[in-house]
Image 1 (cartoon, each protein chain N blue to C red):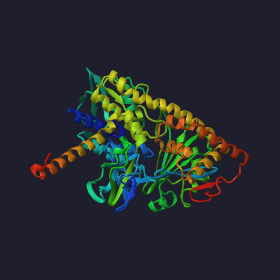
Image 2: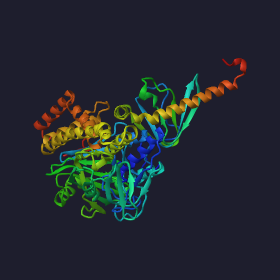
Image 3: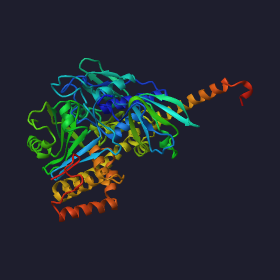
Image 4: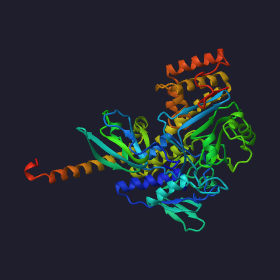
Length: 129
Length: 443
């Protein structure tokens, strides 16, 4: 990582947020790549790989739920924390600040819909509901 | 007019919002400076600190600051007073403040290792579709509901809206006053900025990734800071009528010399300037088809000027796209954002008045140092004084919020207790466990 990079540096395999833990901030990747994995019945499923400029942990801004997935650094990455308080205060003043977040969430819903459709198509017709 | 942060961010948000709602706009940006060149050709005469809150806001807007723009990520502040010094760490131990150069660096820079912050923002507005015209506006007039602009080599162009983001250190202010725009410039005061070439390794050794701020009992000096950059350090002074005598007194203060390398020559800066700074807003930061952004309009008092430019630029852009460009539209939708800053600045003036009193009362300075040192040593999250100082120095929170925090009974009780102890035991060690370590030093 170059010296001028903002945020905190995470090394390969280092956990940035852990599934099940509580959180009150979201993150923006400043450099490098991270992976999002979800643990289910002792098995780890990779949900996504995120790159520079992508958000994660944003659900914690709007919900009081625990983290839904674990995010780990793939190689060295730098990640900037965005405080819930600062972010919500700015949204009060300027609601359009949430636009990119809504856009990112909308993209995720679209991707998820495609995945669900793909899964249903891959099932035999008698098994589709 | 003007392609600094206010002008570029206004252009960026204007084109971004217009694209979202399907409006096709043509935007010309008149900016004679070349940000790829070092001072004075590409300089915007500024300390070059991007506050913690602005870094976060820009990141959520999708505007990340690349590593070649950020000369140094700042993760802590060191407060220097005659009674000692204390480091105040970022609560998350994260580099959340960016030290940048607005242009490409000081006069005489030998190697261009980093890019310009203003140049980066300008490239973003360029990518959005703005046309950058690298010429000075020589004529400006309003006629039949259009604004006409002429430069030395180009023919006169007419526009529906004029956004002025020229700053206050420009001859363009006279041009604006002569034009039929009802513009009165803001009140300003002189500041001082000096750049010293120390080299990356020396800066790392002596200043690290901390911004060094000074609360010294020097008449007319309100606030001073040393900002570590890549190969250079920037020294900024704010106060009343800053002159060479005040600058010399400050640069020779033992607290300043103590955090610079022993062979540092205070009288040999690589670059220096005395820009003017907005200290009271332009009375009317808008008009019919015209809006004034950043320093030439309304900004925050002493701190976070770029953050203020961002807020003003966004408020003006959303007004123009979603409401209209008449004086009434700006009065209804842009003025509230400006008023919010102006009202907050009034509270800021009260805070800086208290700071002046603190600069004169040694026992209060000892109390503040003791309270901050104790909090920094403690593992719990109750760091009232540290947070007040952090937000004051970084400009991350509105002055109103900082002021309200200082009225909290627990904060006041602790401050009174530490002040009482400092009065009764004026030479008592502040924090035996920490004193003499790298993080706290007392005199």
